[in-house]
Image 1 (cartoon, rainbow, N blue to C red):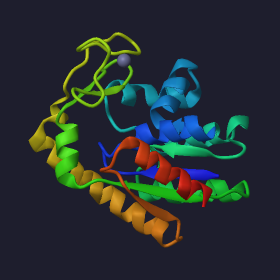
Image 2 (image 1 turned 90 degrees about the horizontal axis):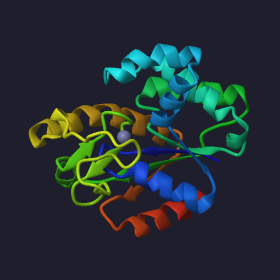
Image 3 (image 1 turned 60 degrees about the vertical axis):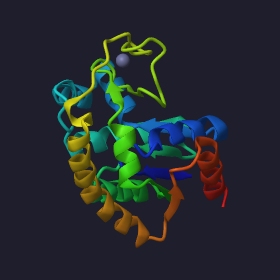
Length: 214
Ligand SMILES: [Zn+2]
């Protein structure tokens, strides 16, 4: 079972994928983790990705796809996984389809966690992120244990320029321009299930479990 999580920034897809993974036993694969692992292990792809990750630039598709394919070929993903943060655009989606089909596998389901823009702005504008490991916190809904300090790596958190409200609106618009064609791509394959992401986390997780079981 390969499940892709799609949603705009702030929709909670990372949180939901993690919850679903812990409750179903499916492996949660995130691009952030794949980047960190490849960089830590100094793989060829890791060395190529490092300067992009360190400077906060988008890692080129061919590097990301290479790492992702390595990751899902590992034994723990033999029965599938939950993909979070990938694909980011239709060319990555098409490359993933092609690579899986070469292995006789395919994406089974795509869940779109939908939250309206006003709510996303409210959520995103309170975000603080970790320059060290990329972890993201929220001043009200997901505060770190110690104010201003990352739980995982103890770096000092910062509010990124692009978490300011006026910038958030532009970011959401840009993200939607990538998300919409991906939704169309997977809708054409009848794989998309939409989930209302404005509800309580438990309710959303239950809805996701039903989709995956169904
Ligand atoms: Zn950190």
